[in-house]
Image (cartoon, rainbow, N blue to C red; front, side, top):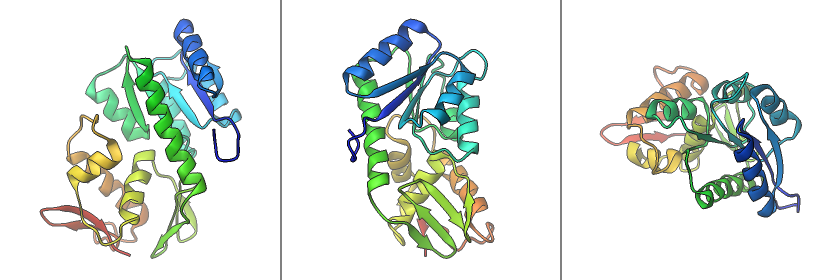
Length: 232
């Protein structure tokens, strides 16, 4: 349950009817409110209309693909956690999904207890962000964990889910150097199959979005032979 007693809402976007109905039943048995969609267009509409707390998203859908839905959500700065559930288990598919802002990725076939556990982790994180810490400010940047929004000089900046998680990790520990391996573990998790270059690419993208001079960053600083840190 959420802090105010409202049942968390899970949106399942899956074209396989038996799997969709099975997931709906199992999530309902866990006490969640469940909304389902069988194609991409319906799924995108429900993502905005149902205001879900977590989206379980298949990649191969009729109409809009799962990646197209994800890209549209993040383009509109929707911060709802998204767990991709897909038979497309290639590393390139996982990397693309995470790059576009997915919060987790589980390949098919999967074990139901693992899926339920991963969804619960996403819900706990979302509850903590809504109920928890105040906004963090440095320079002209404001990071609001509760609504997962970032503003620079008062104007909102669109970040992917992983960009936000990375920035929040560094902002919560100003001055502390993090190795690339620590960042991968804490932001992407143990199951991520990418490399430390992923961290470099995300730092580069964040600098473009929040630094006045990305080539000479004031806040997101490189620590030679270590990794990165944030300076206020």
